[in-house]
Length: 103
Image (cartoon, rainbow, N blue to C red; front, side, top):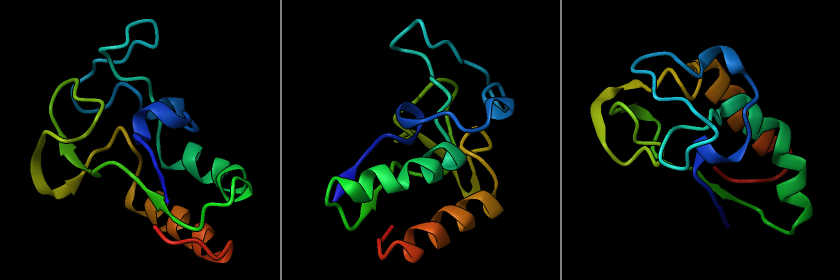
């Protein structure tokens, strides 16, 4: 299992970095760094190449202002827009399954 903080892993869609509450700044370790579902999907072959058959991503629900770790959910019925869309999450999951990986 490869565990990761989605925000810190790979930024595949810079257009979603400032959605919801802002707090994006790659120069500050306390701010969000823009990682998202699209970036993670593009890195799946790398993770698979390490010998991992599963990824454990950080929580996906709407989160607080600048909680890059995603463990400060505010609404368990909404995806955090800064991580991507529901379709992008589905694409990530489908791509992982095609590689024989679990999410």
